[in-house]
Image (cartoon, rainbow, N blue to C red; front, side):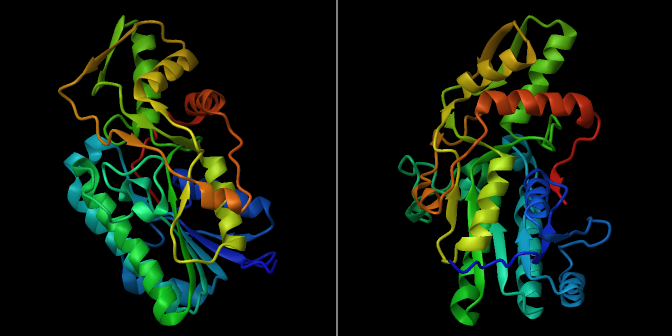
Length: 320
């Protein structure tokens, strides 16, 4: 099979300091590719003219757009404007700039929150735009849906080999553990760690614990992205997940065990649960040869160990 990403190709990874982007940059480097990066201080991707100039001068062979303003339910509710507008600006700048620089290969990372709140389970790619979104993250989801449409539009109008991936909930080394902006898995790691350190006998968590979620280690996402860059060329935005889900209550128990917290867990049903269930159908990705390799319990232990050694006091909410 002819590869769509030649050996040694130069790839600009936008968002290389975030959870997804850092894992993808490592995987591409290990695969023999030259990875180009810029920090947010060096290049604000919301600035269309500077982004266009950078891509024109750098002339990468491919672009991975992993930069985004991201966060959990609390952050989405408190900051809907940047979740919508920052992501739209980043996407418009990078895709338009890549096209202007004649970059023919691009991978856009979206999110599984693009799907309707009550989508069929596991969620097939065809479920996109078939029902109302989950209200708690609608602005972010709409921005990501716009990115998918932009990718398809460049394919249809200009014949670009641009593709999109829709990852499930991600976790791993480099995750964001900030108590106000983190996603559920790192947020729970921090809650149980703090409770253990303070000797608290009970931890109260949001919601009922009954929603089901799927979690993918960032290294598995990176492997899927490299595979897609090399072999996938279609306008369907591919689901990227592990093929299994579990309840938030079960996730909490697994994390508590990894952290060593032995107290009680209570639930606050007055707080939002979010989407009842969100498991992705990864049939198409598996046909490309992808299989996840990091079991959840092991990945949680490794992520907790990484945070203890590297990340306390350096939380962040934006992959840049």
